[in-house]
Image 1 (tube, rainbow, N blue to C red):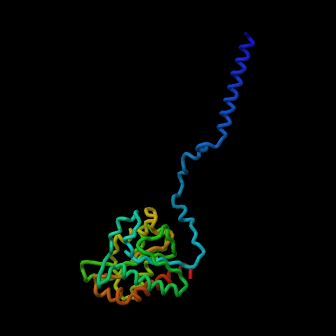
Image 2: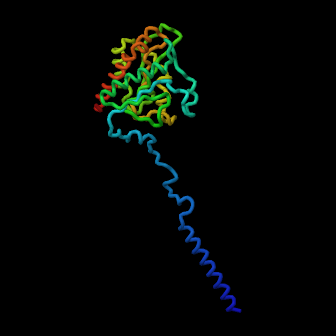
Image 3: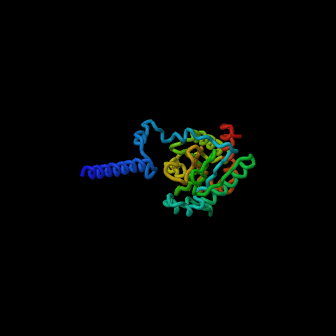
Length: 254
């Protein structure tokens, strides 16, 4: 009897030992999520969510400029900007705004490429995370008051490049000189909050380290302004290109 009990007892311990050994073995197999560490549960309180912006370095390439023809191909906006698809902008002198913006952008491109600068002409939809040394969104204003005249320039409300205000100043000076149009200081929130500047909200927006501005080249509803922006787009183009070249020189890129 005692021998029988000993055999049963021994068998029990052997089975338990095997079970425990199997459990230990299974714990060492990489299945499911790996074991956490206490440090994984909470991020450091001093973490900077925008550190990647301040540590970003410009690629070693020749100067690059993006010229957006406002409202051009606006029917092709992605879903995240669907609300803007019907926004055709202003019109006047038998022209839609996008036609005027595109004509000026093409003239600027010619002038800058002569200086060895890479130039992208962009439609209303900005490529995802688009980067350039300079981004200028070219537009033409409109008003029910046909007597309103002039151009205006605005930087993003939140400028992470640190250089947009400098670009605004250069554009205001050179554009006024090239076109003789007056400066309109009625800058709206629609300009400073322009969708292409909102990289934290949209994928199709300009990289935060791109010096970016929006330019209203003149009023399409003004016969006076149309003589320049429609009749002589090369004047507007000179004002823009001169400012860009001065800016790139300031940044020691040319």
